[in-house]
Length: 266
Image (cartoon, rainbow, N blue to C red; front, side, top):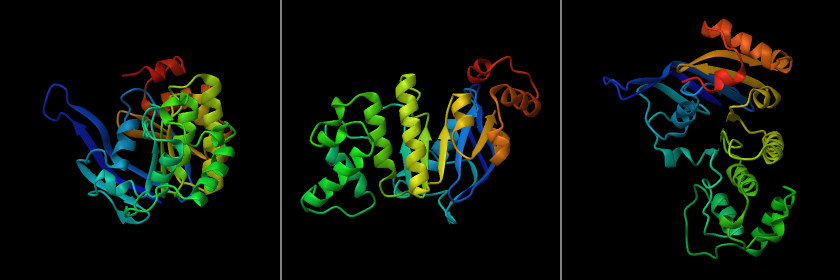
């Protein structure tokens, strides 16, 4: 479903601030893969997602989505086929619009807009059912502005919107990092359910080793713009945090004292 072939990206090339964010990176995702991505600060995780989403052009290499070369496509063209949930709960929605209006926008992604009535009665009933399935009481708040929701409610809504048209690829960019632990766990549980039910090919960045191990069918670890570890299937299910730290040391060439050392690495 997704192929990155020899992708490289350098910021501020030729200056004292030069940073090689991605280095000749190869990555293949099969249809339905749910891949968690972990690594220290500056490892290239966010650059990877931004390269796939088209936020900025890559310096070299190719990006293929469902067999189509999207390397030169602008971000808005890719957004037709890619759903994304950001770390900041304030992103991904129109805060001054109602819940049902946000869902209507998501449903019409990639379609031509006309002068038809914004939200039909049938759509409203569908939205009510979808929101009820979240278990957050949002089905009775269809006309409430999104800005009045809590962070967890907003991330749940954004996740629903991102998956509404069953995108070819779903990008979860540390989407629980700004939430308290209990709310983060609920949003992750919802993420698992939506990805599973819709069979979405998914890339999820996380700074939490336990979450990276617990969720998805595959885990990749990045360091200095490269993928240094790719674990899947039964091997992934047997992983522990200690084992993951040891594997990092074997592949990166230096030892870590703890997951905190990994996550704070620049």
